[in-house]
Image (cartoon, rainbow, N blue to C red; front, side, top):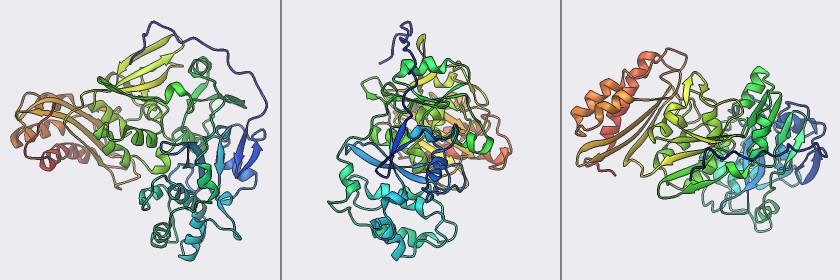
Length: 478
């Protein structure tokens, strides 16, 4: 599945300026010509009079800004997907199809979601309500829905109503009527992201053009914008050129064969979760705890690793799984083990203009896996410590050990000393206790507002003891 690193990626000529990009908003074509460089999708929508969506946190944590995007579906041609409009650049809406709370319904013709919220007292001040409406509508139209998944609202916060009437409204929703226009819309293909150019923003035709553009000084790749959007909102970060790679077909593949699972870097975490369909159980344990559904609908696997964050939840799991990154540049592709990728706090071996193209997880997978996230909240929170295990135990002996850690050093790390303490040893309480002591000394945990260094160290050892306590009496693996 790997590409020959000696074969360069043929560059293409960057797209020439064309007519101003446009977007379908609530069924009407709107030009993005007036969108300010650096303005968020939320700012742009409010500038054209659609003021239902609000800015609450500007970090993608409250959901007051949620809107619906028409995206390619797995079970239907199109799926309505809720996203945080405060994080997306307005230009990223080019060629897309957007529905806001106003587009769902109004006072004279409310949408079923709006009706249920109204009759069940699901709104007091109403500030957060349009965001709740859009998140609930995405779940309302979810293909095959038989009950309401409460996690669809995990990224929406309400500060005055209380959640009981909101949840009651959600649970009261029946299936959409056959003549529902937004349901009918899901049977037709979603918009294909076409190449476009705006002020300080380009959506390239293909990967080759994207790499050519990223070679320019000040150019930054953007997919879900869940990290860059926060930097823009809170710190005023304004890259010279945003290169939108979220729609590039070369970065949106997922291949499972006899030797490995390869995941395209531009697949959103929600897409990864659904398309893997249990093929990598350790990631199944990670993803439901990763931020909120709203964030996972936009965040990508490549973007999460590209930030180099020491507290991202994916890196520890992928480290434990011996993942390999495929990096692309105009001169070709190269592969690097994830354990060799991080070089310091938010720094990596990735060169300027180089892009994560795919993430490869080798097969067979370990037989004993677990992910333990230590945080102040169970969901939608940043980890104080994250620990991922991937072990094989054959005839009572540990024959393979992969342990990835987050939140205990300047980078995500492998617990190499603990792995050594386990390999070749019997999988017993005595071995686990000895290895837990070693694990408690891994990394260089610090004191901060999330946890003390001593607490982090204690949680590392406790995590291995928990793995032992929760596992079956007989453990066998590949």
